[in-house]
Length: 114
Image 1 (tube, rainbow, N blue to C red):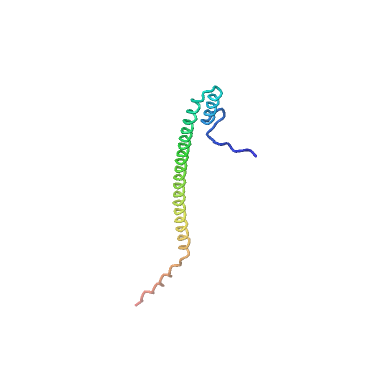
Image 2 (image 1 turned 135 degrees about the horizontal axis):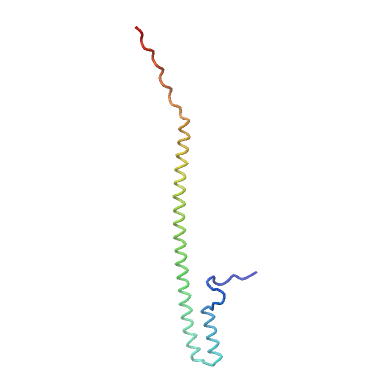
């Protein structure tokens, strides 16, 4: 079973911020820049948290926009349903009215002859 991709935003050949941080950390470690590495790690954690918060905020905005679009679509469907119901009611009224019998016209009275 294949694992799903972590993010649909990531395209082939693109380096994620986490990957870049890992590469920089390994470079600092391999070249024995321990003070710089310690500073980098603390700053990287703050940046990662900030990046995650931003991603969550963007996702929340996208979900809110999707919810609004769905609510508008639901409202349009409800209006269409009411319109169709009204048309059907009018059709039934017209159909039923065709069966209503009108009272017979009064018989003409013969004119008096003198």
